[in-house]
Length: 314
Ligand code: PMP
Image (cartoon, rainbow, N blue to C red; front, side):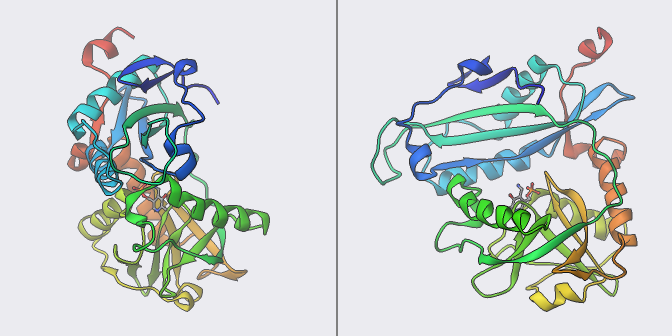
């Protein structure tokens, strides 16, 4: 992995080698961190790097922090300023993944959240150019259940809750699948280990509601808008049964990592024809145009990293 060379750590941008924490750190023991996963997309013609929906990501990060009783002295605007400086230091000219992490940084053991110091770090590394592949994923339905809102809120993006995701993902991979769909405590489909899910039945897109123990995904929210406003497709946010997945015409996962990832098989059953479906294909193409700044109407979802002077002096 090329990079990262730097991290924002303890209030400043430092060489990545200097961004180290102690084994006594509270978050390491109790999973008391909250994080974001963001992307910046490279636009070759403009020689510009566009951060996708940074305000939404930072707002969710700060909300996750407040769920975990963190006192973070940051606003989304301030965080975007820091991230822009960090990406300028890295000087990336390719698609990049960004990982902000707020955590209980105090070097103390003891099970509580209040009156324990917090800190926030950000790092970013290149993820190369995405390949628009026609190969769909094969998912299983996991035997594990999603963490429940009354246990660890899935909408919180809490590091400790990702123990649930790692159990699910590893078991799926070791059983030969690409990922898994997870049922919530009610037995309805929630999401995948690190992405939201949408199924299509008779031209209608259906996705579990935000109170189904799913992460309130920013790509999910973006796709709902693109489907309705640009493609004229009805979207229903409602509970999804496991067997609806088996008879869906199309399925895809969506999220910062997955982007729009077609699913062509679930539990050894073909989804529709077993090929990537037409709505998924069209949506994925539109999504990639939007995130790389090629659709003027959605330019306000993007935040450019480089100034005009920096681009001119390249
Ligand atoms: N669900 C889970 C469990 C995730 O980890 C992610 C990735 N952040 C998502 C959904 C998708 O969310 P987003 O679109 O905000 O990346």
